Length: 281
Image (cartoon, rainbow, N blue to C red; front, side, top):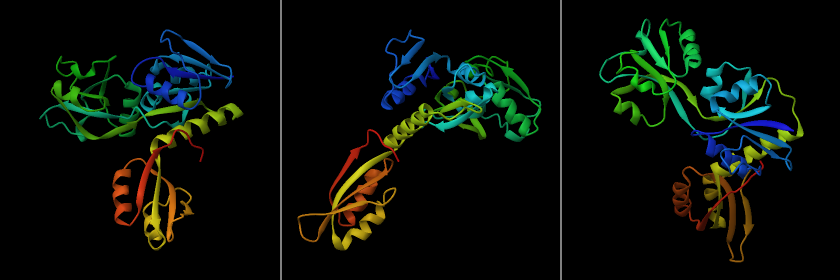
């Protein structure tokens, strides 16, 4: 059986479970459960702290895990990313006291508070910057106000928490993070692993794309399908109405309303959009 670690709490937990359910795998209903065995699919799920998952996978205790890219890099574990999952997006950034004028080029000698010391050390070493790291476990935004640090480096989603603490982001984004599937390096490919990857990829595609159906006159078919070419070309069928055809195609979910407007202007009618629940491409 494949042994897979799933976040037991935090922002990644619920969405990880939702994705696995959408992919056809059993998931726990009781948050106190630590292990769930899906005998039908040959997988054991272990519910662990998100920050610990990369360590368990890297040590070979578990085969795969779902965690954040930032947590994987911060851990230094012998594990590797094999599939981005498309949720839990965050940015790891520097933040300074508002109006202080501190720049990324002047970090040398500063005290930088962070709960991701491993990740920050990689960045500072790559940029040959000597700064003092102050490792904290949460509530990093308070470090400057309490005099523990000069600036911070932390995961930022909306930035509202930083503003309340009198901080502002500056410099380039250190890391774009999201939920990822990781494996121990290297992991032997198995039928169960290939099936898992196909199913998860199918869920990602289903969430990122929609089906568009529309009717269009033959003389405007080329213009309409140029707007919505699909992945491998649209499906075109004749209609009972002379001179018309029906078109079905897969398009990105993002921007599909604007696409419907463009199709209408191109002469398409009876334009319908349908959610995709699963896919194999």
